[in-house]
Amino acid sequence: MNANLFHNLLNLVFGVIGVLVLADWTAFGFDAPTSVKIVGGLMVAQNALKLIINVSRDGVSGLAKPQPPVDGN
Picture 1 (cartoon, one colour):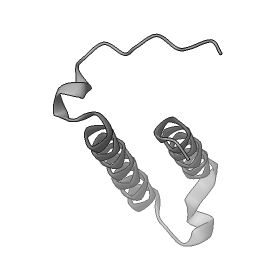
Picture 2 (cartoon, helix red, strand yellow):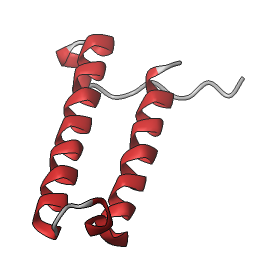
Picture 3 (cartoon, one colour):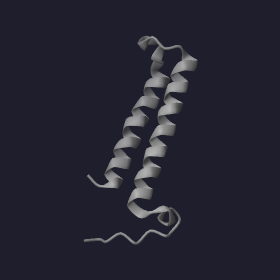
């Protein structure tokens, strides 16, 4: 699995989690403020994980350099 696919899967999973918060997490035994804190923490963890993946793949300088064009083949 490449890094882009992994990023997209993370975005999908956490998007679903966000929808569940809107749907009503009180059914799972959480009150509204707690469910928002849980999702906020998961979003921070997701972004930290994506940043770690990017730094390990491209290095710190790779975070700001222009990306190469996509090969159409």
